Length: 221
Image 1 (cartoon, helix red, strand yellow):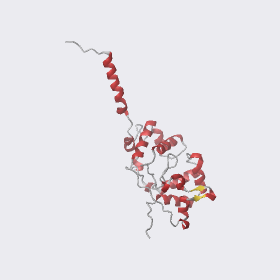
Image 2: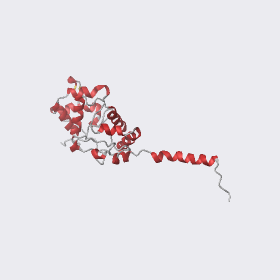
Image 3: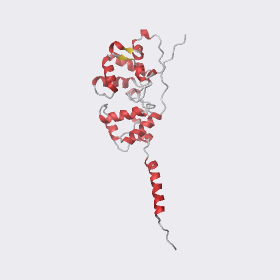
């Protein structure tokens, strides 16, 4: 009985099949990182703090991640790793993720559905200083309206201006205070540092509550 001949061609075919199979076998699963954590045990599952749907846990001040731009999420994880954004839980977690894991989980989170954006109606804002500050700002103090950078209704714009609408008030307050005390410094051209420091403590809390509220409906006549 003749033995099969292991020709160079057969070895090339087998090698090619292995190479083609490698990416699918070792692809990074963003959903798995979100639900179970990363390869490094220090990279804990995201849902523990950000909820099973990625919409955050308002009572604890944990922000919504679902539907945020992947570029923004990747940048924030990179900033936690570099120290330009500081947070006791997120810094070691981000450092435990590798680049592929950051890309994968950011892409997955961006694909999750988010709640509809609120429709902030510009009615009676002349008598509402909080609405006026959120929508128009106070240029006498070099404070632009929040929606002028963060988009209509505070829905967010790109990697530098995240959504404000629907985020927990505690989270928004903490971020504004982080800009004020220097524990967060990853804004373009130090824009948010100047804005946050120009606001009073009462305004910080009021603006956070303004954007954390549910969708506002225009009053019917």
